Length: 359
Ligand SMILES: [Ca+2]
Ligand SMILES: [Ca+2]
Image (cartoon, rainbow, N blue to C red; front, side, top):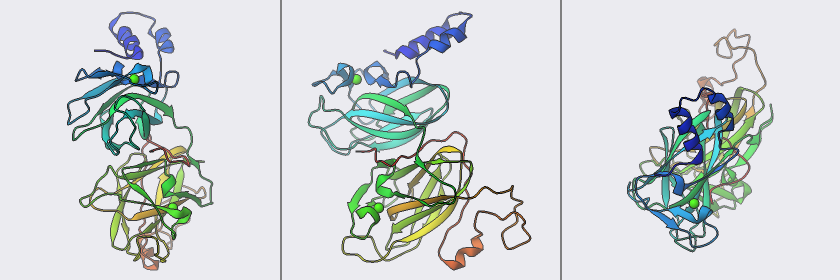
């Protein structure tokens, strides 16, 4: 079994009775000083290390056999602090759309969809990125594929996500769905009636599919409430689920607006609004559907609310002297808006930049 240098250093530190551990800890390698981890150095369940066929293969070797649960690669990585990190996977496949699972500290993102296929089974390394939450100190990362054929994997690499799309108090910030930080397993289609000329479809599936999702990353100026407006095309009544910073899903009902946004369609995009609680700095907003098909998404607008006094829980319209930011569900009569407040966890995941990472 091979392990990472950092793992060896840490293992030696923990197994030897050396008194000055702090001095060694300060010298241990973390993911910012050594962001890349070769898969051939991971602990593997199946001895399937292969030689690279071209100079795109990092370290000259990669790992295969990620098929039907036959192979897992486990690595221990050290993060300098807790937070959201972009985990980029260097993969090899000549079949487009192969998928792999990545588990960080026991939390699994299933079936991450690889991007464009390469031109070789031994090289032409491509990359895709997911957003993960790391703890300060050691973290366990496991790559595998428990169903079907996965790609071969060359390396993984980490980058701290220090900023997302910058939000401003009182100003609606627009982010195209097609420019979400991660667009995994879904499709981006041209549409003459969509903002930016594109929309994202194939979210979810007939019985739901959490592997087909969008993830936005935003940078909030301060902790507080924000309104999230989702612009969509949906010629049926459907749902979309939202997870903020890896928290539990809020199910948002999406009304039928009689269009899929296909070329030739002329109907305007409808929208749904929810209120979310954001933490200061980086926040992840993940949209998916675990029970059925979702709507086609065009873009979102996020507006950070003005700072307010501590709320006393009295709904607006009463004797509340410190108005609630979250709209009352009684406002639903004005239109088919779904309003919800979501508590964010402190250790969140992610973020989002004005770029699409998944190829
Ligand atoms: Ca490698
Ligand atoms: Ca769009």
